[in-house]
Length: 302
Image: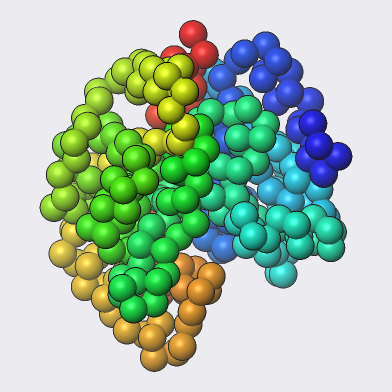
């Protein structure tokens, strides 16, 4: 491997023995949730994956070293540190060369997972085309890495603060499969419904693993999105969430929030406006995705 990358021995052993490994991002720890909920969430996600018989690999940069698999102490360090960078493709060189600490976004995690040979990645929601992107050109790097890297991303759809219609169009243009897990409707992160239909519905982890094998065996490059709806008990009313998000977007515009600061601002504002309900929903959908990702990774490695 590269001198800048350190793979945890347990994860390297699992990879060498062709055992299932699930990559996990770290911006959800440093930027997505407050302390100490972020630590509890990160450790529980790892426990869920282990319980399903797979190996969790949380990815982050600690003092300039790209880590594939964090210790509990490293997770706690990342969760409390104040000046953690959000790292996607353009930020790796700077973060590593300056020996800084960075949390990998969905796209950054995909890059490292691909370098390490990890094929399955669980997250909350992917980035996409932002509302108003026809004026701002604000489109997440996640979509580019999905088009280029052979990694399957299990999520609860794209974050509902985005323009879901434009995100679907962009993924189609880039040739990225969007698979509904036991659903024909795109889930909208906090809600099971979005009003957008999906072309592909698969009902078992094995079917998804078979699609991964078929695509990559044909030499077709690129990842895929497995959209796994939030459990029914925690799904929020889509209309209500849209109203909350619209209000949060208006406040972001008034405060001049731009670039990488937009998503953390909106998620925090949505939590505030829903009186914390969105945080509980966020936690449950992450756990749900981790469970499915581990099952897919096991099927893929059989």
